[in-house]
Image 1 (cartoon, rainbow, N blue to C red):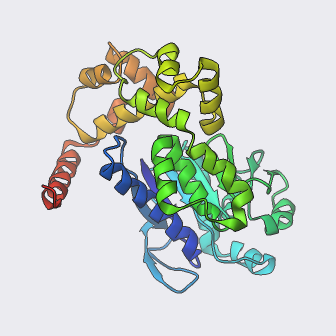
Image 2: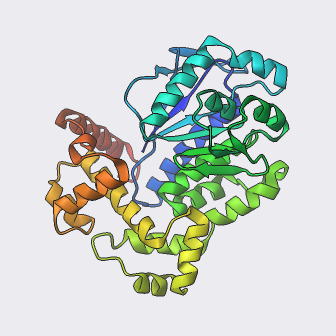
Length: 339
């Protein structure tokens, strides 16, 4: 999953670090625990090649380009009071970033913003007509400035289609965990436990519900069962027996945690596995289709087109790029002490 994280001048240090560290921790925990899912590939991007954080640290950034990632994250900028924030939103780099956010959202990318980053995102017009949340003490300013957004500042996380917004400062971590959970609830739970996410009293009223979603053992058991049998037909009866619950309870728990049905989650895991194989192996489409449960490659093509609006050749990198990945992976394996 390719994730670009926007860094503007005066980016909120805690927010930027929380997002980066959450995904890096998820990668490390997935490898250490043998969890099979594509890595989160992180890239810091900006409208300039070097930015300075609110605390004065220099951060190198790649310029925002036309290639669209799987997810684009907008952390906060470090302006906590209304007047300085309004002045910052008039800056040329913020206006340029807002235009880029609008273009990226139009191309189907998952767009995520936290804290004051929701203001930068709202400047693009992407939130118009959508439900969203923001920093609670700036809710009045947000409503006055963006009257077309349906704001609910009582929520920690609000998802509206392909746009996810999060509340105040420490919600950057909740936002990152939400994105990780769309790939793997099990991995999100593990990451939350290692980072002790539930120890934030200033947001405990909201964090508790979100954390319980991450820790739902039924969803975790379903994910483990599903990943082990992606090549076989889906059976809700078998899934309910494997998770030790009824079909109705299983569907209700997965919907509460992820907002989708068990079958949709199963298909999403198939898409994830197919994309991973397309990007990292030379396996034929026929072989990949068989591995994710389709007798004909045409069925896999249709699934990728319906889910991602992409063809297999749009996903598979050039041969030279795959060889570079193979070499890098080999080098990492050589360096592992247990080898």
